[in-house]
Length: 625
Image 1 (cartoon, rainbow, N blue to C red):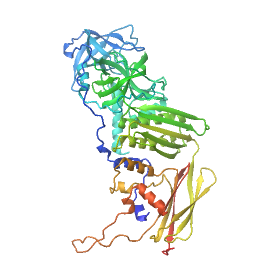
Image 2 (cartoon, rainbow, N blue to C red):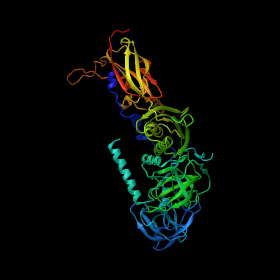
Image 3 (cartoon, rainbow, N blue to C red):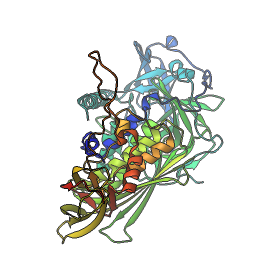
Image 4 (cartoon, one colour):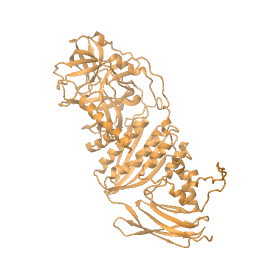
């Protein structure tokens, strides 16, 4: 490469930035609406007779339906306190007070009762929607059924392969401005969690330890709670409609890891649709989240707020609307999901120390990327079972429709502080890129992450570089590189590097690790080219430097290649017209292919991370061999 071009390359301080810039180069702001966006299912008419807020009077007695244990709903008595007007949805909330009941051991509301249908005079009034922490747990706000029915007024976005139920594990997720936004979001979540219970359904996670759940919560930026039961049991698929008062779990991940929020079914319609929760889940609008019938183990008392411990047991349908007044979905309708596998090996424990974890996440390109990162990270933490330094060999394989025979990338990572996070960083960026790339839908899609980890610092440090042979245009340089494994004897590698025929003066030989001063997409980053196809995207992803590569490259000077002709200025003088460098006309993959072929670039791979950078100046005598 011409030294002038090398000096114009941007050097990246962090490896993941390659993928970030590539995402930006794709123009992801123009991602179109997903295929399958369709019209709404029409007006939702509950099978149960309804009573609007105007027909309520303070002191009126009624009951709600909810599951306290098992799967059968029970009636809990209550009375109407008042109708509370509001300026946002819901515009009219109904304040209720729970009355004493021998069946209700906690004496009031509990997490998991959101969506519980409230009846007065045998007519459906609405669903329990809002309660308060550290307060009188017998008091709650009810979302009117009329406002809940309106969640179906907007179109669904049904996706996937119709008629093919995806059961997953069944039978059959830097700048100051960004930092500020993240802090504000966390403060908002913390504030809402301390004042209101039901406006944001608590997510329960099974199959991960408490520490791994904390990591997942940090990635998703939502409050999560570990539940005391494992995950991984098969979820049955049943074509039995929901009924009002039943416990329903909305799943974000399932399989060997489960992430779900459990609430209560509010109402059903004759066409198989249902309403639940009485508030939003994640308030993501039109969605495709699996809905499962849940088993309630028991209700746990708490001064903060009592809560149900529940487990999903059978996939029954799909939530298609996630709005402020509630969630709505359809029974008997299932969508494909994003499949994920982790194959983990503890290299320090021997060949047989291998674990396989399978899970699935919701078919949402934007949320799915965060879920994958969070669940994979949590599983790695649990399987590794320690914190601190280490080396990880990571192979990511991606398979999906139109992606035969699949795409694979292997890289090696070392961290002197926390290898778990370092091992996943690049793969997370790649998975996000596959899900968000704008060229074509690769769906269904599956990711397999093979990770082998060891506490041993598998690092090769570049210790010395010796260059021999005459440096003449068209000649060959013999390069000997000395590498030092951590606390072991040195090893030597030999390379032959070609001096270009047009080189003259002083050339520079650079020997570096693949993760040091990595080559960028100069043509893309400079605005001379754009990645305009899925095939080109895959090719450029393949071309990215890897940490386990030892790279030897010759940077040379070709003299003044600037043409001395050009346009005349106002002063009548002709000024030279600048020319683009070869690297500004080529994609990174093309630059590497050309330079390897001409002999000015050599790449050697190993199972160690190669660290360091050394330079040597070479005088070219100008005599062509």
